[in-house]
Amino acid sequence: MLIGSLALMGFPFLTGFYSKDAILELAFAQYNIGSHFAYYLGCFAAFFTAFYSVRLLFLVFLSNPNGNRKVVLNAHEGSWEIGFPLFILSILSVSIGYLTKEIFIGFGTKFWGSAIFILPNNYGLSDIEFINLFAKLFPLILTLLGSCLAYFLYAFEINSFFALKRKPSFRHVYSFINKKWYFDRFYNQFISQNVLDLSYAFSYRDLDRGLLEKLGPSGIAEAVFLYFFFFFSFFISI
Image (tube, rainbow, N blue to C red):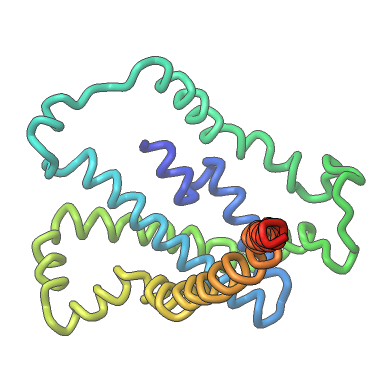
């Protein structure tokens, strides 16, 4: 969990550090408004990733347990079938980025050859070597800041943090962020539900159970029934 969280937040020299920084530096090296907006948005995403990763580690391993007593007393290490793959993944998370960074995305690397074709005006890996030092260090600064802030809040100021969340002025902000900016509610209420209603009213009731059944199985069955009914009626009348 420790190695996985550090790799996820892009801690220096772990695998996630190289992939995250390469993506952000590529965005910065494009030198246009959209790319720089994506760069700063990614940097702040790195801040919050570091924050919740350290929060996870602290709440699970360093704080008093909040779970059911029976569950806590029966907690134990996993079997070797679970531990061995995690051990392999942890070794790769620590070493593979440092060992293969220059091979995959290094300056002037020919590893991919012609397997991936990139137009010359879209090739930016060479540009990331020459961006300013602040642009390279800014994601790292926010990562370390998010980690330290999470540890400080949950280790020393947890009561103050909880009291802040209970304040009426902050409760609406907390609820807004906690409910993911109400994107899910907006999508479900105004888009998803309308699509479902349309699917039921048109696709299922009118088209599937209506037109297609009248032209298909139910219509053919009724036609055959009427045919035999009139045939036998005519035969009996004769």
